[in-house]
Image 1 (cartoon, rainbow, N blue to C red):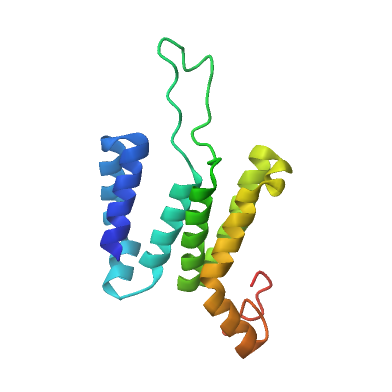
Image 2 (cartoon, rainbow, N blue to C red; image 1 turned 30 degrees about the vertical axis):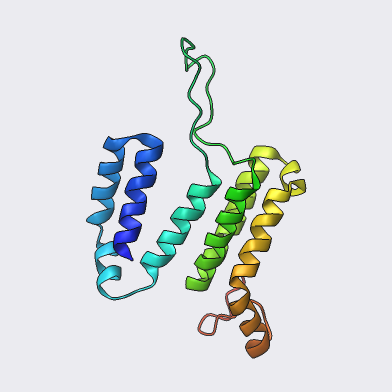
Amino acid sequence: IALAVLLSLIWAVARRYGRGPAVLAGLLYAVTSTLVQTSSNGNHDPLIALWVLWTWWFLTSPKPAPPSGEDVTSNPTPPSEMPSSLAPWALAGACLGLGYLTKSSAVLLLPAILAAGLWRERLQFLASPRVWLLLLVAAAVASPLLVRNVRGHGTLFYEGVNSHITWM
């Protein structure tokens, strides 16, 4: 799984920023103690990293190239845009749901996605079907665990060891 994370990272960075930054990102990630430790212990952290990476990938789109002859500094564009079509949002929802099935802390991506959307599009973001599709698909993918938690523990978000933590 760690190899899939590493290859996905290199591919994603190369697609967005070029070959040089991709090699640098891959090398830096490959030598981190976190990757080495978690991949050698059969830990779930590389898998959650994979789902977070793919959720990020689907929710951002490449920076549009400026028209030829136009000065980039006179008309700056943001580094990324949230996609307008529904398919990337559904795929991101699937990755988010799989991330939640892997580790419950993936639920923390939701406030980050909502904050970014509200920052970018204000309250119109909440009226868009994109965000609701993301939530619906994520809930559908994570539904086996959510149903199990309700039936077995009486709550959607069960955390046995840290049940006193309010965000869960």
